[in-house]
Length: 132
Image (cartoon, rainbow, N blue to C red; front, side):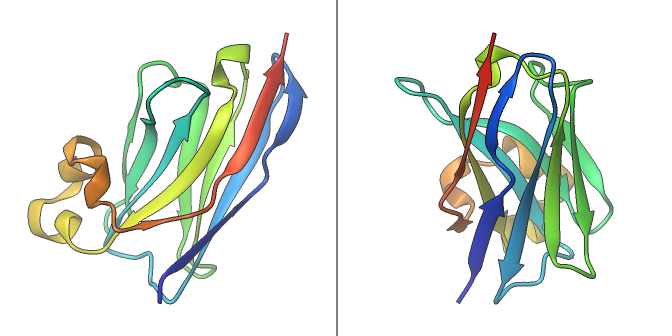
């Protein structure tokens, strides 16, 4: 059974930094799509950053480009999201998700363009709150 556990969220002031971690068990992160998504109150869930762990290809939402970095550690079976220059609008619940099927079929671009619901495994989320 796949389990994803996020950690690292918290409350910071604008301009601060946080690093989120997503530890996977029952699942090998290599050669798959893994992503970070977020959902703010009253808003739809959005894709923030994804990584195709086979070759390290990454994709980012325009709103976080240059500020967030997604990375992987295959030895720890963990994906990270380093967030810098945080803004109040980054406040949201952040979720880690993993795909074990479609990325292998369609390649790295699917990690960004594929329907979110096709990410078969999701964590419980970690809250990030940025105050001005």
